[in-house]
Amino acid sequence: MKTLLLWDIDGTLIASGGAGMKSMQTALGTVFGIDGSVADIEFSGRTDRWIVGQIFRKFGVPLTEENITRYFDGYVAGLPATLANPQARVLPGVREALAAAAAHGAIAQGLLTGNMRRGAQAKLSHHGLWDHFPFGAFADDSELRNDLGPHALRRAKEHHGVDFSGPSVWVIGDTPHDIACGNAIGARTLAVATGSHPLEELARHKPTLLLENLSDTAALVRNFTAG
Image 1 (tube, one colour):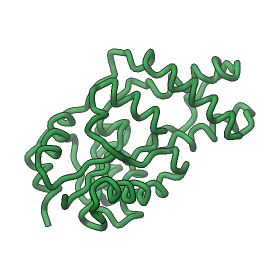
Image 2: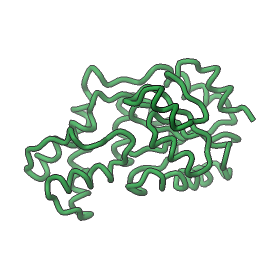
Image 3: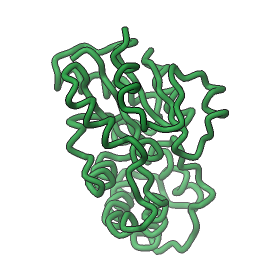
């Protein structure tokens, strides 16, 4: 293994049709009896723990580990229903890119996502993608996205016995937060305009590679494995 790909989920691998936001809003009612909107909370590029902190502050819910756990239990329980919507889909080229990387022999793949691990598993399992990722870093590790990279690198080393670092690592995502997260560990970054941030905005953050989508599988693998 010479190259490590660390993938974001929402807006990069899949579009969920707002399933995460809908499930978080539903959980407010089922867990705390609160009837309120979370539409004004920033979700894009943020971690679930950060988002929950904002929601709790907005509605006056004490930010305790017990409440966080109860809320995430309700959130994950509601995901299967909210994911069953016609807008939930795997984004262009993703299945082919994951399969090509897995078949390459020198490429390892993991997750670097703002989702809690249980939420990540629910979302990716819904689309048959979870088994591509034997390890990752999640919002369980920190509410700050820039803290997640070292956790992903440590787990990659534990799984593959390889000390991935610097340009051998690619962080792939659809937001400026993903680019910053990659920069924080000295990785190369691939930004894709398949989420809520257009090419022009992503370009201002100077990713290593900027693409409209992941549809050119051969070019992706060439970039990932270039020295």
